[in-house]
Image 1 (cartoon, rainbow, N blue to C red):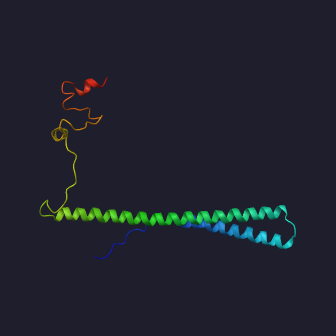
Image 2: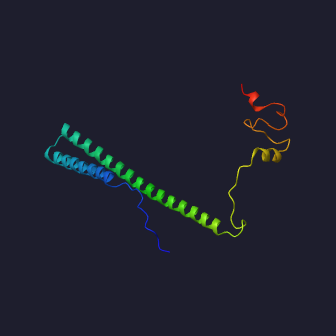
Image 3: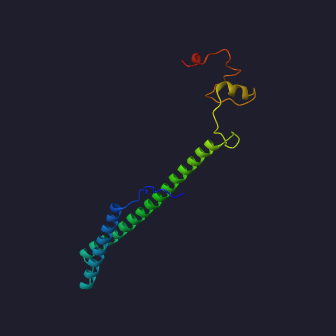
Length: 149
């Protein structure tokens, strides 16, 4: 069976790449400016401090934005694979249930037993939850509506 063409999953693209590239261009500009200032003068000036601060800040910003973009891309790929796996599992379960000749081939989904089934399953010594209120032996004479005032 040929693989159907599925839509491509969301992956961070142009906008994230734009900001990473923009941070890289600014970082390169600040580093070049700092290099020019260092080569022209012998003593440290306020412009050199400003250029160094800008170079370090924009470099770190570019690294952080690049790492964020890579993490988003990996998460988007994992999410798409998980969705594909869930669709495949549900499709296989659906076709298995439809092709089963008897109920023995397919494991049925568990259902929640009704109130009467819970009372028959519980013996006198079992625990009773707070929400259940022990509807069996202890509250046999009381109605649930009377307890709530």
